[in-house]
Image 1 (cartoon, helix red, strand yellow):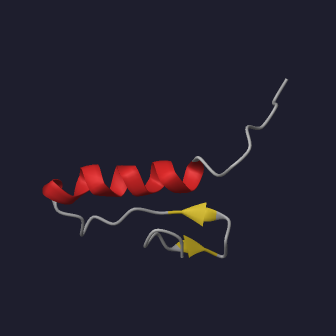
Image 2 (image 1 turned 180 degrees about the vertical axis):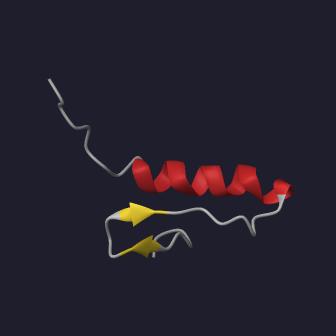
Length: 44
């Protein structure tokens, strides 16, 4: 549970319809911080 984002079985990320519109920017910043820790995947 990084940055207040809950994963499902550690393999999926979900957002909630309960987020109010004024919360979206904060949620996107949190996702960006979490995802910036991941290494790029080479799909070629």
